[in-house]
Image (cartoon, rainbow, N blue to C red; front, side, top):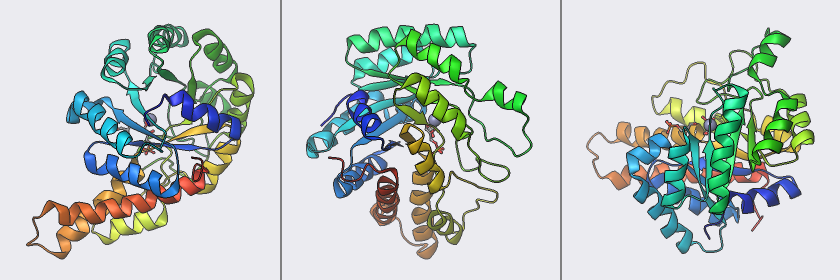
Length: 307
Ligand code: G3H
Ligand code: 13P
Ligand code: ZN
């Protein structure tokens, strides 16, 4: 059943578990996320970036989610706009049927971010749609980073408190040291858990971890085996995800792990049978592997069995 992001994340916030927010760019990814949720009895957030919306068409993105939500009426699912860059983009998504939006004005100064977020919250809440905002900049923390540099890039807990109070935003993504993609950390993985705990204490709302892909060994190996190159890649270890959930993270954004898993299988099949051109012979094993990766993640985040 299609529900607002709030319906899913308020429960996760109260019961202290994480829910995967999985990106999709086509039917294969989207249907696989639903299949894993069905298998694990897990709520899900499915999210589309502006790039994914451009690729699919907004009507197709919403249409596919609605059809799958009807096919699996027992699964609570929210359709979320990932990294909306403007008020206009959020309004378009709301009008098209998204049940949750992110306004990402985190690259603007604090007050501008706050003003833009407030505008989105006002219109979204009239439509029963939840809103996520971000504070700080997404970047991996390096071992030798100074306290000043850290303060300049990562979320400021006091600002987070004021931001949430003033904007009435539903969820906040605090920058605590993750980054997008497959190359998250130069040295050892490191996240600022103390900062996270302070943000949770001062805001007491569901928090979001962007750049939360783990690149599990099995996924990295499959990609390498297929002939792919992931030199220097590093994800957020599973133990860190669980520590982050203990510290108050409830929405765990995941895209890279799904892309790598899917493409490993596509490349493997392409290499193994150079005469193959039936799309289904590539996509069926790609979906199988991706489903396994998502199902494992649902166990790790604690959302398995929550419906
Ligand atoms: O946070 C970004 C997501 O991984 C989506 O990326 O803009 O390439 O669709 P994209
Ligand atoms: P990953 O690149 O770690 O999968 O993060 C995705 C994300 O944060 C989408 O908003
Ligand atoms: Zn993100």
